[in-house]
Amino acid sequence: MTDTLLLTTELPASPEAFRDAAWADVLPYYDTLATAPLEPTSANVEPWLATWSRLDTLVGEAGTLAMIAYTGDTADAAREQAYLRFSMDIFPKLEEQQVRLARRLLDLGWTRADLETTLRRFRTDIEIFREANVERFSRIEELSAGYQKLVGGLSVDWDGQAKTIPQLQPYLKDTDRAVRERAFRLGAQAYLDRRDELAECFDRMYALRIAVAKEAGFADYQQYCFAAKHRFDYSPQDTARFHDAVRETVTPAVAKLMEYRRRSLGVDALRPWDVSVDLDIKEPLKPFATVDVFVDRARKIFSRVDAELGDQFALMAKESLLDLESRPGKAPGGYCTDLSFRGRPFIFMNAVGVPDDVNTLVHEAGHCFHDFATHALPYTWMRKTGHEAAELASMSMELLAMPYLVQPDGYYTRDEARIAWLEHLEDVLGALVHIASVDAFQAWIYTDPAGADRDARDAKWLQIRAEFEQGVNWDGLEQERTARWYRQLHIFELPFYYIEYGIAQLGALQVFRNAVQDAGNAVTMYKQFLALGGTRTLPELYAAAGAKLVFDAATMKELVEFTMERIDALRAGADAPFTGIIPR
Image 1 (spheres, one colour):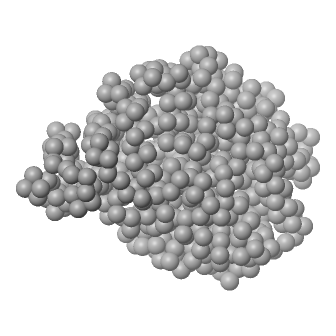
Image 2 (tube, rainbow, N blue to C red):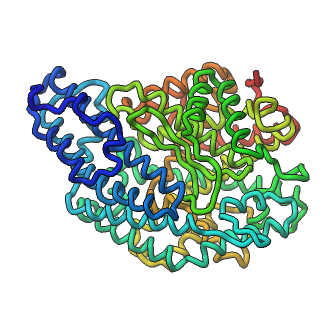
């Protein structure tokens, strides 16, 4: 066997070997694996799997590095071409090879207990794969890169200075209402000015996705996505129940929060530029002035949650695995990605010195801790989870870290921390409303033929948003309200990747509730969950973290009430985000 099987020792030593590779340079490695003799024994199959897994990490990390470079500077033509070579040529064709090798493995009838969930994913990938879709996915990736370039290049004039859209965030928290309104309108107008280009981009993406679903034999693209995303443990009907439950339990709670905000601000009607300004303080919170301070205090916070987690974050800082500041040409948003060969995560975001930056960094760090914990698993597919589990890791960390945001190790004085805790818990509920509306919008787009019409999409967004988002007066701002969905990169680049945030947020609230009773045990269970990677079903992973999947109104109501109790306590002057955890 060793005469014909490509062994891990015969692979390139690092991803650098594939940095400038074309598909013709990559394919021979997969051809060798596809033709190597295999017998259904562990002694035969496991070396083959180890080689396949290592090859995937080498090629994958080379592509990830190209993506990191491009999103860091979307105006750099060379970086763009390198990114497109991977996203449009190599990765779509790599998917075909994954199916090819997975079919070989399944045909053997070989199995292993901790690979059962992986083998189930493989079966689904084989069932839905169509060679004709490879080119379609390549074209979608090209359009996604175009979307990133377009929105990454957006800027506005602010008193003679060019500001990126993320750099307007501090002005949305200014105590001067006129400043907030100006920042809001400028940010929205930047997207409205490019609305036709964005709509054209989405039209082309939409047509390709509908063709993908039809080619694979699905009635609509939503059904295709549920299969492609390996959603084995819930259905489109469950997500519809989730939407209904949010409308019934979360929307009224957020409306109540907005009414409190309106009264506190002393305004006749709460407008969209009033929803971010801090209450009870004269100046907006400024948790950090430099990226160095931002990183150093984050390390201390994670160390107080758990010493091992703090060490892991410190290692990322030491190895320059953080790209945090906003700058012109940088793609919007934030992400954590995995440099799978070296076993290191990487964080990308657009920090501008506001509390939301702290939440984003803590969120992405949760993904990082997940990556660190799973790297010990033998094969790359065992390390991968669905987004529902990945987001449970990140959103739980947001809440577990909350008590430790206080100085001297954290970002805030005690009173400032109370304001930040309030903002975060209010945002948890507001996020559920946003998540449900985005998912409902996408469900409509891809199951109703009218989703092909750009004007119909805008009208439907306004209708859905009005159903979910109450308590804010949008009179005369219909266009600005429409601009919000054009800013949601998931709708363009990652369709149907959004309900996972809602499912995970409800799971994280359960972890949060557990921490109130026993913080140490909650962190222990959290880390045990992280280490499982993708080796268990979704309900089993949630159970390991001390949570369950929630789609029903009754359970959602309990968690909303729990969160509102914490908010009321903080408003009454409590000096901790929740009783039961005293900062060490």
